[in-house]
Amino acid sequence: MGADSTIDAMSAAGSQSPSTDDTSPTGSNDLRVEVLSVVFKVREVQPDTPPALCVLLTRSDAARPWALPGGDVGASETLSASARRLLAEKMDVRKVAHLEQLSVFSDPDRVPGARTIASTYVGLVPTDAPARLPDEAAWQQVDALPELAYDHAQIITAARHRIAAKLSYTNIAFALAPARFPMSELSEIYCAALGYAVDTTNLLRILSRRAVVVSTGTVRKTGRTGGRPPALYAFADNELRVTDEFATLRPPM
Image (cartoon, rainbow, N blue to C red; front, side):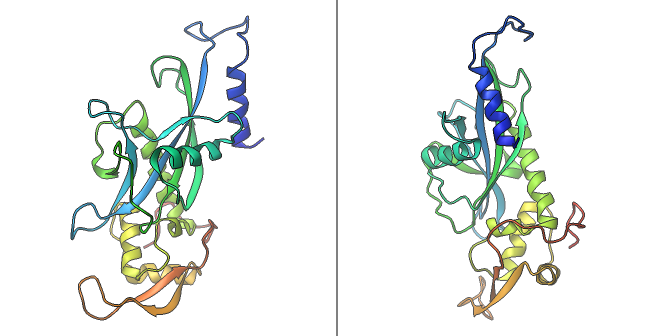
């Protein structure tokens, strides 16, 4: 049984009539399943500064802590379908280039009130995706997060570690990059996601050897600071694939 099916079964179990053998510490059989999404995007936080990894957060009013977007699972939806629907309806985020299940957070006391199990997802949005958000949402820099609700900081940390690991052995950066890019821009995306400097020349060598990126044969009209127009590259695939099953967790840059 897949992960989505497992959690859907747990959700269904929570809606059944109370059992006579209730072993919950509170004596309550209430159970709620929610979907939370950690959506990352690499953005320029301040003008003329290197782009930073940002996460999508929301809050209902200024007095409350920020939280990950999400909500209840739809009665006739899979977990991933619920995650995409909630991002589209509540955040107006419709271009999620990659979405995968992260983990299940099930501490009995993770939120007040009825016990709530969170099925979490990590999503990636390209740098050139539309930036419009509702008033209650914002892209927040991962390295300078505001106060967060419940266990959402822990969830974001787990998501960042997942993406950093996958950058070493898959082509997952396609979901953070624009359709065409100079290698200097792609190295900034890797740097933001990994949290340390990435050499552009080494990155091109590694990704070319693994057939991850290809030259488009075109150039950008001008560089960011003028000078010679940079060559443009693109990802060979726009779906996740393993490129080096023997890579270590820290990419060999």
